[in-house]
Length: 107
Image (cartoon, rainbow, N blue to C red; front, side):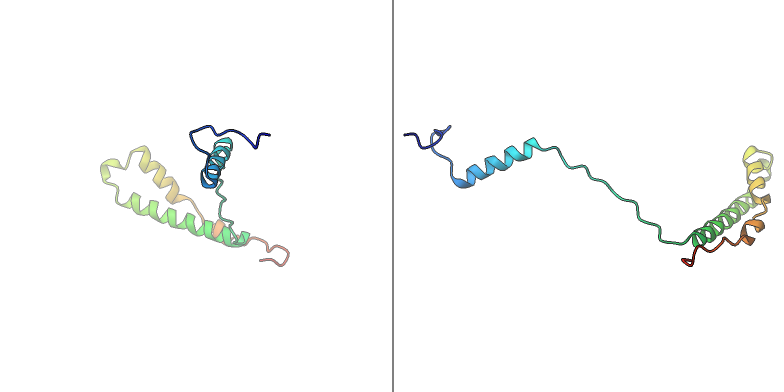
């Protein structure tokens, strides 16, 4: 009566060799796992985000004003200078004056 499969090589496999073959076969059959990265959750309230964005706009406007101030006179008539002047001329005081509504006691 046969006891099992006949060995494929010259000698029978040890348990460790058999386990290594099994793991290699299982690894070859499965595709590589897809790695997904999650964005960090922004836990600031809407009013905090609004205030941060308005502060960022004011900071950018100040940077563009400084850039416009150091432009040489030869570049004052270029499209870049016109765009910088338009940004500097924007009145952001209305945005600063806006206070967003509070939301259901969560703010």
